[in-house]
Length: 128
Image 1 (cartoon, rainbow, N blue to C red):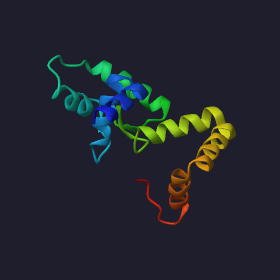
Image 2: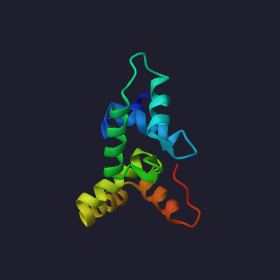
Image 3: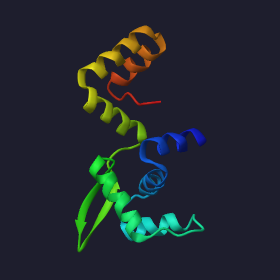
């Protein structure tokens, strides 16, 4: 669990990681107020509404969350299933074919990785 928390924190920053965890834990889109209340339940020093609103806005700009107009405000939900999905999307966006070529090189050099990749490419293949 500590590795996951560190990975999320490295990708989103400490507060962004907490916000994404809160969004991932919900089955419904969340208002800023609902995210704020979820975060403040776990804190001794409460966060300000505007702080959470800013973090959610930045996560939406980055593509980690989606923002949909609801009345006078917005509701937010995760745009990715996990940090790995966002990281891969960012690498492919930033480095394109070169990133894919390096991944293929890695898979070619590692029989276990190559087998996992083959299994994932099959219909119904699931990530492990």
